[in-house]
Amino acid sequence: MIDTHIHLDVEDYSDDLSTVIERAKAVGVDQIFIPAVDEQSADAAVAISRQYPDTVYPMLGLHPEEVKADFEQVLHAMKQRLKQSHPFIAIGEVGLDFYWSRVFEKEQLAAFEEQVKWSVEYQLPLMIHCRKGQNEMIHILKRYEKDLPGGVFHCFTGNEKEADAFLQFDKFMLGIGGVLTFKKSHLPEVLPHIPLSRIVLETDGPYMAPVPMRGKRNESSFLVYVVTKMAESYGISEQEVMTQTTINAHRLFRLVSGERSLQRPLIDFPNSNAKSLI
Image (cartoon, rainbow, N blue to C red; front, side, top):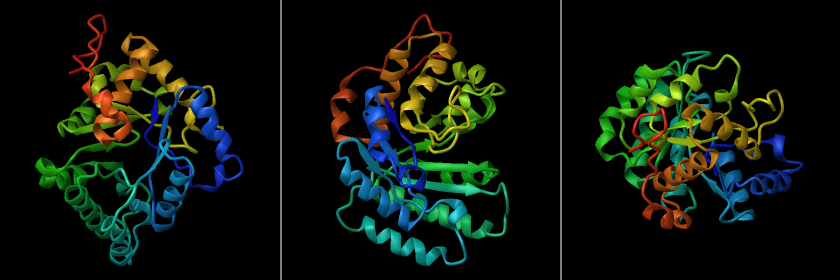
């Protein structure tokens, strides 16, 4: 398994980071991706990735909730890290968030588009966060669609119509995490509408812990609960879910350690109630 989105750089993990990673490996999570939210977290993600090479991989991005009046200076400073040899596997966590406020709406739109341009320029996939800004986000992405290398619509919780709107971008995946296991979630019914070849696993730790760990600090080892529910939704085995989502992540993020996996065909599950996985 691959946890494509967890904030290991935050204080919640400062006391037992090594144990968290050990627990992840013990249940089969081989690789862990850390999105950045600002300059400091990008540097922290890099530092952690150096502690755990071939296991932890960092991203670079300015989160929409961190976009303020000085965003242009911040982005200029962050981009300098891309102009030299760097370890980043994606541009993220970036996007739009108008859930609480639209005070910096114009700034968020400009910051997101600038980072979409980074994705095109450096051919790094996007890790996208979007709340209450779907129409604006899609409008921006369409301008660059043919040149984008792909990305993840992080923390997907929508319906079939919303899934279709995102999946029109052929090189993009949906990130599915703990919300799938929540009692009131409609995702178990929506998932069979989505090809498994378009899904990657994520935790979004320390937030959004799945049932039966809901309310606790989330961590990569909890992906097993997401996999169990996903397998149930598709009517396939947990191993098939783990294998296909890992292939998906390797293909999208082009990890060197995953290159051999790219030679394997996409798995077809003829007995699944899901649509074709191709």
